[in-house]
Image (cartoon, rainbow, N blue to C red):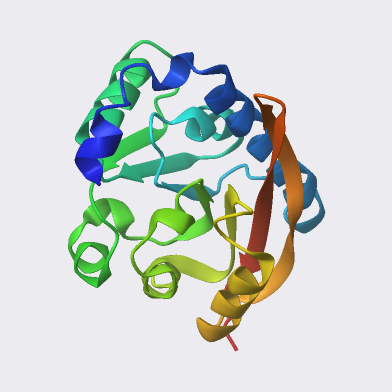
Length: 199
């Protein structure tokens, strides 16, 4: 699967649909986060399945630090090249898988995160619930998790059930926007959940 994404890396950012998806994901996140955490200033963000970092680039000016992870080496290479030519020096790109082993071994993942975003990645995971549990290990108490996926691949009830099974508190799961391609509307679901606060 990683090599499949490697094949798309070079031209990824040139796709108007890919850019529109990132723009609309960011806009929908901004609407929800404005209610929950009005400022990301000083916050740490994990962009899980970051691809070439289109969402990371939008979040970078708003937060203290972004760790952007993807399994595709070539997607991460594109992001590294972009960072070297911009002012977005608070993005740390990593070509890794998130699992219990990497969470405990990678210093970049220490310190935990205030927000985890996952744009168009969860429906591709071999075990969605297991990944949510692994991501929970690096979320601060009360931290937020936000995901976007094609509704056809990730039904609303599947997201709600996964949040419940993994101990996340559902904030919202809804159709957030749609892309139109070749006359067909393709809805995108957004799920936002919160890690339990410490007692």
